[in-house]
Length: 485
Image 1: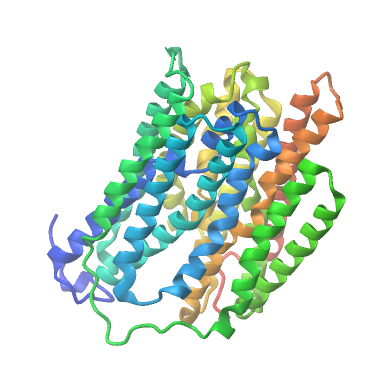
Image 2: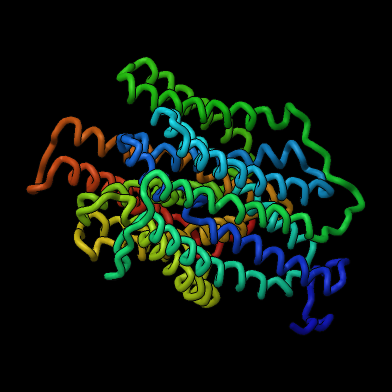
């Protein structure tokens, strides 16, 4: 690797080139560790399979993913609690270490002679912890190279992180297939006996996260002349109210479904409304900008597809004729393998089009994945995960559009807001699970389908309709090239 000339650099960093190179390699390596542990950190497919094995219904099996997306609000609180640049490396190490401890704890819990209800609670908790610390770790990684490298030198790090990273996720998913069993294009794996299959899978993620924690302490972060100060409590009170109330609303909705207590449901609706108003008020300065408001609506509608992978996995029993866990590994392999390919193609497309095109392309791919899952059964059903993997890159192109529309002074706040847009999309996964359980419990049938198959297909239809509305709003109201207001 040669050192770029001064003419090629912009926003020059005060660190030497060897120090910058070290930061860039660490960024790519830590991101690679996250991808390697993707079968357990990308909460959804694996956790849904485990919940199904523990005897949970579709609603409960979707709870880990629901809580994961709900907890993506936590990075904003973490950033408020510890805003100092000097604490960056420590906070990053703590995020990875917390994830490692949680994975190890879940693995031990699965081995102990405990009731399935306790084990289910731990699976759901792991989803919540991952949702809190992993987005925070990603944000801190970006800050580390943002402060510790020149902008013009980050290309290689991004290529390594997001080109080779998904390939590591494929490797991790292959290991998942060998542990859980399944058929990989005619290559049959018997898998390990339960519960050792899941125990080894989650336990393997712990040392991977421990390596990332150790590496994070090696970043070189240049000191700043003036450390950022924590905002006054009054300024963030809407955030501190909105986040816990939102968690309470999810808990109340689930309690209402389990106990059939309508009072829980009504209180849950009220809590959800309070949370929405609190978070909206906190980010009111951004939402007053028309383009950012419209982009927010579009992003939330399309992000709702992120609640679908759990049901896509659970539907494997109907679509493929075997237990969901038998296909969890290959589904993740297909998902991440296609993401690695699509990442390069979509990036090339963006250089020749406009920010809105990135949103529309990934949204259309998301829609195609849901329609495919709804209409196709048999071995070709697995192609829905190939399509979905490419569509997941909406998580790159929706924030990219919002950054393009943001005022320069608002960039940090805009990115925090973009991360939190997973939060209002979180209930989608629970909604999809509720649709499945309602149709099955009431033994509804149509088109010659069993109630189980009909429920899953209706959940994919619901996801498709939300995405379609998002596409219509984007096409009709979003400008191709947003301008800062």
